[in-house]
Image (tube, rainbow, N blue to C red; front, side):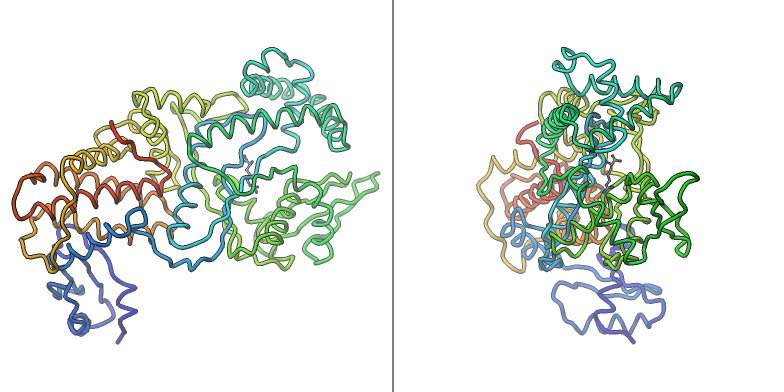
Length: 531
Ligand code: ARG
């Protein structure tokens, strides 16, 4: 026998053909006994509780549901669907993390979209979120671009469009250094000089960083995102030696063999016991490596913020690397279970992998401009189209960005969903606010009204689930189905016609607009006033 909590945890929403609103699978329990327990609740919302095979099916009474749900939407407004299951717990979410001196491209749109949606989902589920960026503003790749600028840079072109000019230099450097390994050595020497505090190099570095950040900020402005912590990798450099010392002291890392003829010893982390590749924190010449920085980063974050969890929104190609970092933190005595990787698949465009190295990219800036033009100048629609396209598939999948899909008016796109919103708003403008419904509602609820009403009622559950699974696409999929149902309702029911059902219909339209607005907000998409 199982109690009510156990029943609650098994509730499913059955497929449409079943003709019920909830279903409770009873494969190990007696369905009749379960049905009796549910009937004994005497919940006025449950019109019918019946056993069908191994399932208990529950149907709602719309006369009870309608006044209840529609009053809640009207009262909660922009907070309809939210819950406080997070209990105010603090989480830190790292996302975006673009590299300095390289442009943001359409691939970054996916990271930004997933990161922003997660931030909103955590907040909507009652968490306090601290957002952090993590600019790639240090290291060899940047040194190579600085070297290229010194060799082939052109001030006038840099001033005209710095990020584009630097990309050209990076592509050229990648090509030339493939045939000429001496360039690698030169870049290494430059980086050492920069690390040593060379003033001229530091000024160039600062300038590259400033122009890049200004460009990123423009993109963030269009996306409506901002970060509480804006440190880049360079910020953490000074904490690396202490982090390496600590890793050694705690036995998480150890000295390796000195290279033949060399003096210094490398510092390594051995992860064989966890079936993970071992890796170096420090080379024998004393230079620290990328992983050492990330360890210093985790330490800094945990020391400065009392957070329950740190979420890393990073592409799936860095999954193994982050596992190594998280495990190392565990070996150092830090709460490894607080570190989580939210990964996602690659974005292709025009059938090709986006690659900064070869220059095969579409600048995010150009993508946004193009999108807004395609949306006839309506910013929310253009930007929203890109964001939705990046979120509509489960994040683990690779996706092919397509303008046709992103801008589609047929469905599964931001414009399609936004259009339903604009339609709903247009109806509401033509009518006075509906009177509150009597409870229970006495007029019959039509089939299309009931279907839409149940989706409105279902929205808070989707918000909960999308957070629990860190799956923004569940919101996207729900909104698409919602807009579809709204359009069916709109086509089959004369909303503004006088008569007894008018208040219900108007309240449903108002609730629909609210659900679409709240759902799109979760995805980081704004609603337009007109289309
Ligand atoms: N900047 C890196 C990149 O573009 C991502 C940084 C991921 N975050 C981290 N803490 N390592 O690939």
